Image 1: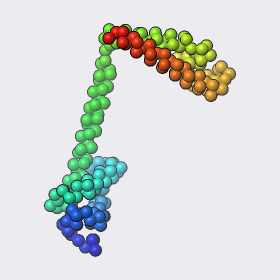
Image 2: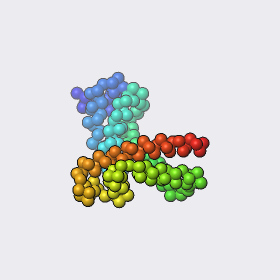
Image 3: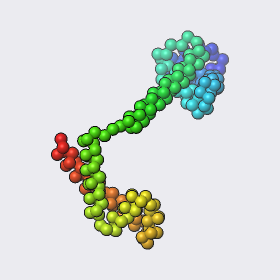
Image 4: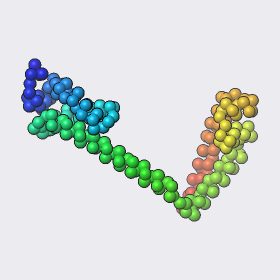
Length: 189
């Protein structure tokens, strides 16, 4: 029955939340809109997403959306969604470029340099205070960047032992360094 209705009649039924009318609109236009979206995006997944977004929007705004010609509105909605996605990509790319430029051009002031040196000293003192076996495993893991398997083989211990020692060393260092670094920062303020 709904397949016999005109677009105008379907829109009138859609405005009163007739799901069957919405389903007929979807059935009637989804394939055409998908082909159109593929042509402008050159990407099937993105085209599919855009078409779905358009139909979700149509359903969500069914009571307030003004549709003179349904097909024109749908094609225009696909085009707008595409341009909206394009704009968001450009903004993200701009943010990425801006962040990269900032990171590449970042310079340390005297305060940052002093804090960095103090933090390095704290880390070195923290590592030196670890139990000898834990210290050895931690240094092999972090400074020499050996895998747990390589460390286990070199020291003739299990990989689980290496993993536990590294984990415990990190926990101890975070606790010690975090507390001490906080105190340093507070004394500088």
